[in-house]
Image 1 (cartoon, rainbow, N blue to C red):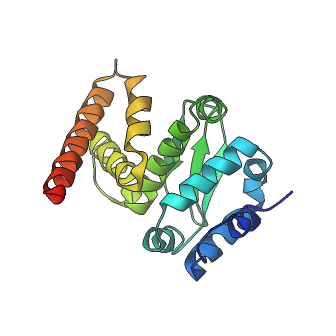
Image 2: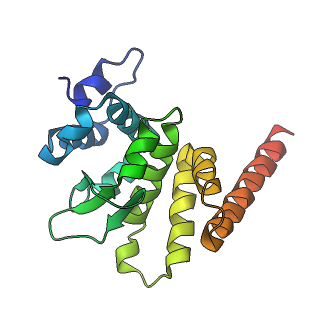
Length: 186
C-alpha cells in the first residue's frame, strides 16, 4: 500500500512540494487513525484533492499546534469536535462515506474543506452562533474552489432554513466572483 505522501510525490508533472506541504502530507499519511482512508481508493483520492486545494499558509495554520484527525463515526455527514488536548477531530459519518463512494465524490471533498474551515477559523474558541460559523466555513470551502460542490450538497437539504440561508450566501459569493472576473476581463 502506498502512503498518501508517496502518491503525491510520484504524480506526473507534479511541482516540487514545499516543506510545509511535504510535512503535512507525511504526518497525515503516517497517523494510525488515517489508515482506513489510505486503504480506500475513493477516500485516498478525495484527500489528495483536498490537500491540493490547501495552500502552504492554510496547511501551516492547520498543523500549527496539533494534528487534524479524521475518524469514522455514526451520525449525518460530518462535524468537527471542538479542539481536544492533543488533536482536532473531524468525525466522518456514514452519509459522507456514501457520498465519497457515489458518482459525485467531490461533494464529499467540499464537505471536508468546510469542516477544515471550522478548524482554520478557530470556531471552537469564538463566540459565534451556529449559522454564522456555518456561513464562514462555507466561504472557506468556496475560496478553496469547492463552492459548486458544496452548493450541490446544500441543495439536497434545502428544506432547512439554515441551508437555504447558506445557499443564498454561496449564490452571493458566486455572483461576486463572476462580477470580479467580468471586470478583470475588461
